[in-house]
Length: 301
Image (tube, rainbow, N blue to C red; front, top):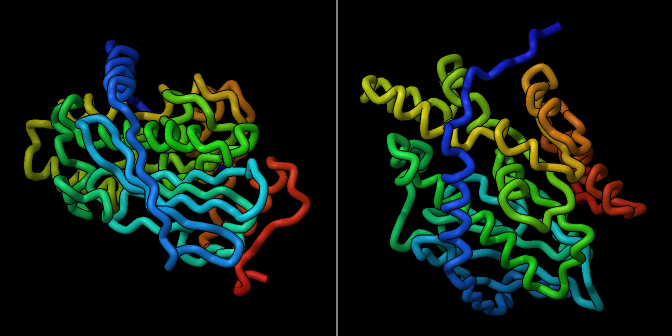
């Protein structure tokens, strides 16, 4: 049996004040949404829009909004940023037919394509942009962007507010759920900010390798980097999460997070198969939403 991972990170004294200021700044800025139909992205069973909306900065963001034809409201999938350059209306390989059942919103945070003016992020490089200062760290703005995406989804009358799942291949669903209301279910993979300093020293995989590269260049900034990433560690957010959550990762790695969560959490180790993991996730969401069947892409059937 593997020993449970115990991150050594400590919560900053001003953790709650830091995020309170960030949310206050976000609340002071109108969403100012603009939606334009995208015929090339629409289907015979759904209409897709390109949406512009505003986060802190102020910064203009982008998202793909797909709404099924017919009478709503519809169960809703919110895909939070994967911190990669390209954002798609649905994850690559997913069944496009899902757009006929679910309202789908897939966001581009600042720096990603379609939201890269005036800031075009580097990949790799984004993860350490401003990391020596928690006030200037680009991920502070990106967390706010995820919260603003949630704000936007809640303006849509077509979204079923009893069935909104936030999905992300990192911690963003957890941080967003703790800072903003509205999500009823979560699917997350704590990987970027969970025990960052402990885990970075034992890996050469990105994005954590960005931290290693940064510290090789600026070894005297280790304490500054450790302080900044501690504001983002999901361990300090999950005590506020009460909704059903699917966590991707080994239980030995995520045990501390599960113990800190008051809500129901299911931990699932990846089988390193897009098909196997994908089927499990689709069935988990369908079960949580009370759906009798799942919509799978043809190559998974």
